[in-house]
Image (cartoon, rainbow over all chains, first blue to last red; front, side, top):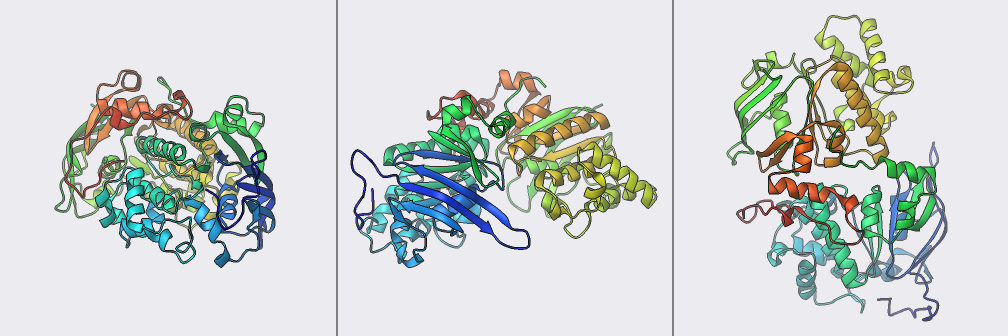
Length: 275
Length: 284
């Protein structure tokens, strides 16, 4: 679903990527200058499921925050369907806000405890930047019912507050909110890291299912290569703000080239039956 | 006699229905016992009950004996000297376990000086030695660092040093590596195993990650809704689980054995808990 107000520059033979990122750099100045993202280039095709893997501080979150225009790069270019988002003022980013939605790590902090679930989920639809767009659903009640059903929450959840739900259910609420404006790209930042192993499987199944059914493009950030392997078709491994290895998930998982990727894979704990 | 004997332990908070309902387990000297179950199952409450750290409005009944000493109802004046000496605890988040305003070395040394007569110099020497035991490079420098100057893995190793320096009989670890990166987790688990061996301490290891548990423990307790539903040797529980909930937990943990993109097994495929009244928390 591309933004109807801008003509899609792609031709059938040469589909323009959803995201084209060139030489992206983000420097946090200060007494100790930190180069959080260092000269990163990548493209995300329509329907791609890109995993971004790395340890804390590798620049994963800074990268996706810039993709979502929540943070602005020091240098480099980001194009969404060929249209640069660099230097575009917030009030004119409607095309990005309706097309790109985020799910964060911890649903305890990403959901307002004083709002009812129904209001949380439809809030993006009421946003001033979104509500007049033709690609954003205007029947809020109908869309609420649809997305609640899509994430497997009972219809009466809308009246309740986030604290009445378990961690896994709260993450479903966050996913429902992200889906409400019919986005094209879903960016998930460690969406299962704060969840129990037993709940993790349910949320991963749900994400896989939704991405299939709605034809979403997904960018999935995780420190866990096993999780990424399960939901993504391609992966970029980050270290110190750079992408050190990239390829299809199977390729990177089966034949990691970089010692760092090998170390990451070796560190994944596996079940032993005897100590 | 086992080192720790927990008999018919129930814990209730205020007037709410009990969080733990009559649990029984024992830990032998030097044993490594893993406690698994999902959030809210009562794992941490069990740990706090053993440590005597439940809030005042909680009521614990039953019996908890450590080396024959009854801990339930033990006045704090008698309990406090035991903590950090006979039994100690490692929490999930080292940044909150450490005092941000005090050099970490002093915090470790304080544990020594609280429990035995030793001079400042002796305590410092013991601490430096312990910091080296937990694989901290350059112990002198770490001694004089504040918590925020250390990495997450280094902080958790300082907390391990604090928990182990008095050679307690029992160390309780509550999700000690959940907040860490995988590579750091690996190091911290190695340090933990090595030092438990060196000190000869028993360990109650709480986690929701079965893979991590299997790297440390040789016995398993499975907790569900405040009760222990399965207990036994790691190998027998993991290869031949008896309770459907345990089977479900094991199935969800084998992410490496499922074809990428295919549906992952969930606990609900194996075990459906009885319906609860609406409004209470339900997993999922």
